[in-house]
Image (cartoon, rainbow, N blue to C red; front, side, top):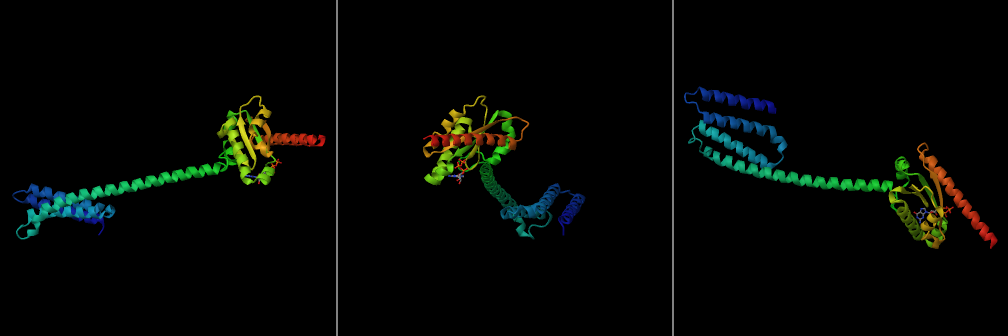
Length: 282
Ligand SMILES: Nc1nc2c(ncn2[C@@H]2O[C@H](COP(=O)(O)OP(=O)(O)OP(=O)(O)O)[C@@H](O)[C@H]2O)c(=O)[nH]1
């Protein structure tokens, strides 16, 4: 039978019994009250039984309802014929205490589950932040990568006047002659110097030995900047070529980077020509 049918049966019985008790010469209001409480308790048990899931609580609830029903039967029937009915109060009290214990254990269980879920949410959040950081940053130098640069390009374009394009010279030579580890140290040192000079959030490693930085210099002193940036790497005969482009709102990132890259390339070519002239002279 469905819950609704059971509920209808229970309340039909309750009302028939009430009618019977009221029509009695000596109306027994105490018994009617007990009848209603028994009806309410059994109805509630039917409603919550399947979703309770805590055995102590279900047992306690059933015990308490049994106490109420025994109490009622004790009033209606001859208790001497059914001596077990004298346990009604014991059933009610034990049922009540066990219900409290059941609720306490349920709350403790739920608290432990919530704590576990919170820890899991925090772990997932940390993992997500870590993944987002790794997806947008270069592992070696911890600078933003090409993806981060393009994602923030429009925002940075609003605040800055110039974009610098850096490409290391003879980096392959240092890598091949002093080892990959040394090459990594050069890249890390260069990134640190860039971060110090332009602030880390405005510098990016586009890939390999290419970097860019956004800045506000009106009259950039390229030679001074070059001396500062190559202070560590020059012992490995590595230098840097620098190009820049003025940022304006109409140009797209690809075009602006292309202009800065071309300027950087011009710088690289003129340096190597100067170097060749020096070698020819000597
Ligand atoms: N150590 C190290 N080397 C890298 C890394 N990424 C790229 N490279 C190396 O960087 C080198 C870049 O090559 P090139 O662009 O020809 O460098 P270059 O010798 O400076 O050439 P020019 O720019 O023409 O002066 C390659 O040999 C890559 O293997 C890295 O993360 N660490």
